[in-house]
Image 1 (cartoon, rainbow, N blue to C red):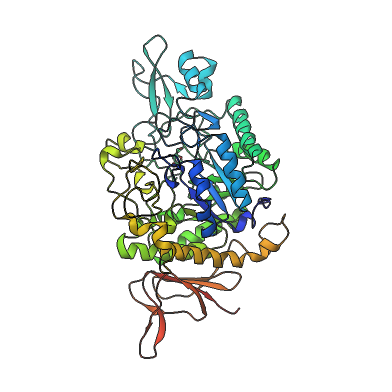
Image 2 (image 1 turned 90 degrees about the horizontal axis):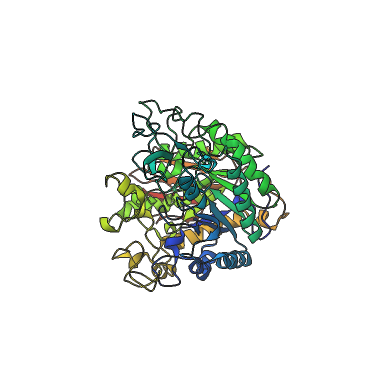
Length: 551
Ligand code: GLC
């Protein structure tokens, strides 16, 4: 059973377009250079204008910010950087008033080193019950000076850090799959699950509609924490099944537990961050008593080639079908290179990102738009090195820049930094010169802008699901098949598929124009010129089109 429709929403979960707000970078209301909750409230008009159904809000819980909120020191409070619990309550109320939902980010895999549990564990010493909520182990080697196993951290370096014991001597090591400031919790300890339930209920009682669950495939660790085989290529996305750090069978019990709490709150839903490539293993997270939905990341890494895009789409559809769920789609998020840059930057990158926006928004299921994608923002690799903040930069000895490039604050208006994002130009990440052309203000009235394309596409898409809007508030997606599309034959390096309701989406990823498929043009991501002796319309390279075809 998928999720019931949230009471405040315009349509069922299964049809929604959700907008990912990266809280630091969306809008700053108090002039400290960092985005905040009041900033989101102040900009709800932008979300209404875009026509989205709700927001996935990145983590705003109390956190020292080593990984920008993914290191939580109090999961039931809002960090003062972003406001307070009351501001969150107001955000929920305002979104609901606008018939939008709010998903909170939940971080159950680890805490901050500043969480009281971790401080108590360090203070209590080896063998104490306080240490059992985490993975404290003795080191290897004569003085215990080597980490307990060979696991690497996702951000570079070893996944273990040694503590100084209360008596001042170098002591045990603790596990952190991410930064040293993010110690992994041991989900075998009863306090861990009990506390997560309290956290879930705290935010649900406040009115949130659901959760995005961070590292949903990483919560259970293998018995004995065995070494990885030397030839395993470790990655957060499981490419090698022998990488024993992820996707353990016990993880499913955690998701059942989360689901039981959500089932007490009809209309709510859980979305998992599940970096699992294998279709069967991925769909196991979507069993009827586990997560409602899961992020499938195939499109965030597929190159702009028709075959690769089609393969990514088919694998997502197949996974959702196997699980009796619906697929979710995202071209980018706060962890990956923005699509404009990924597809080649400059003119082709932007045209391709626009084309892929139409492909994504035509697919059945839930679409996510990462803040700034609707403005055609590129990743910014010009950030001065001394301003970089992602732990990856230091952890890799400056070999990898990390993810700051896709987290630069959003430009709203004007020609100079901070482009209306804040009242100070000293923003938490510097904003580059030349972003005046990407501001909301500059794109709003321009029919050719990426913002106008997104608005038109979402408006048209929402009209397809109008039946579901008018329908029974308790129902799911209705009769339409949400897990398949009909593929058409297409010229080489092009693709075309038809939705159940007869809308066709065609993409030309090749380097030459192809004939425009028959049908009434609903929307195109770029100009559709005519060519040839007969003056027939063509679909140029790097362009996608939506057509209505009689079925
Ligand atoms: C997830 C988040 C990422 C974070 C990591 C550790 O992958 O998306 O931003 O750094 O988890 O919490």
